Length: 561
Image (cartoon, rainbow, N blue to C red; front, side, top):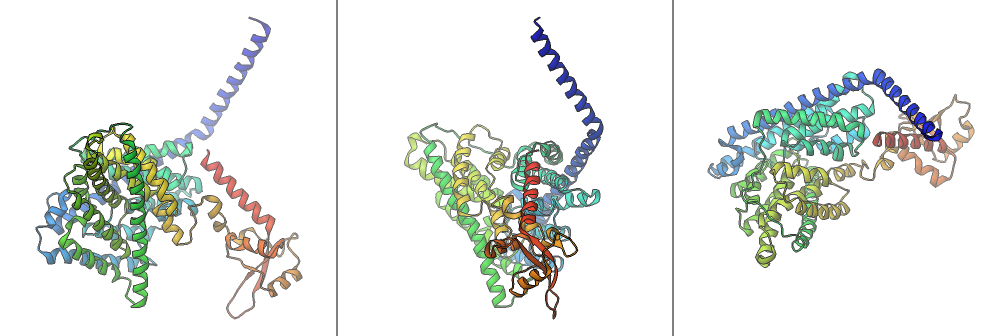
């Protein structure tokens, strides 16, 4: 062995020894806390999983009692046999109960859902509203049980957020820990609700946390597995949808058809989302114009849904029976088109009436119906180069849902896990990629982020857009007793010219002053009724930029840790 080789080996040995010592030190000092965090994640996963399970079973029990069905998977078949007045009255009564709950236990009469959980992850250190969240859970339970045309994933996700918020408050978790616990709870709830552990974990990362940091992956997976085990202990290892006709894909020749299907599904997803927003705006306008009490609003929507369900009971509830019929190819072309249109209308009515529920399950149903209709036309025009039309229903289901959620990865996987068919993934991936690429340019990334944008919460553009809104001028300004503060006479002169900001204003509101007036600082004041503004400090441009850069650096460090 040459001296140079011996020296190199000794150097490598020293580096390896130092790495082992450092690893041992980290394990001794930080290991127990990390292991403790994983146990907390497991406990949250179990609680969130049971919460999702009880929510699902509660819906089933109430639906069975109200509609007299022995199997809620065939709800609309039983509803067809009920007297028309019963089909009409059930949603009205449900809407009335929902209105009373939301009127008394929420400030704005609005159901909390996935968008609020995303907001909590980004802005409030992984916390969500607890009182309003619990009220929203009961409101959604009544809505889904009494004929509301939504899904159960929205309330389940927020319910999980309430669980993680309670834990975060008890252990005084910081922002990173609170967000990680929120991700664990969401992953467990989605996994337990749909028996989809892989998609549940990725949904929490892709949709709620909106990053794939390594430090969050292990606890989220632990929680997702816990939620899945709870589901399977009750329901067994079964899929939500069973495909009677396996699809086949004639590669290369048929792929352009799935590209077209993806574009069509992107348009359909945008129509669904914009229909919901239009219904909300119209309902708000009518409520203000006719001074309708907000607790009556859900009952009015219930009456509209009940009237529609008399003729088309397929719109009732989650719609798994119709979705299964579409995936099995047991619907005619005109039926698939009509049911897709009516389901879109019913979802818009439900959301416009501020009833509870989520948008994922309806998007699955509308996607499956749209894909089936496309497949029936495509296979009819080119039967020699086409596979089965049920394959198009399968791809359409994923494409519309992915575009609505803005989550192509987790939606692709959740569709696989809902059906148990992994052989036709290329068709789903092609359709999903095209639908999300198109829809994300016509709305603010997704349904949830567009909801937040409509509330002036700018999360769609990323942290650089919303971090300024999280910082108050009072926390960044230099107080009057600070020797580095601005000259008081100069501040008073600027106040007289109307150039000042409120102490509780955000940096988002303050930053435009620096560009407009081209000044190094802006006076910070406090207004009291009947009194002139009181000077309390000065906000310097350099201080605001430093605070913004620190926040950006902390966000980047979390997302890449």
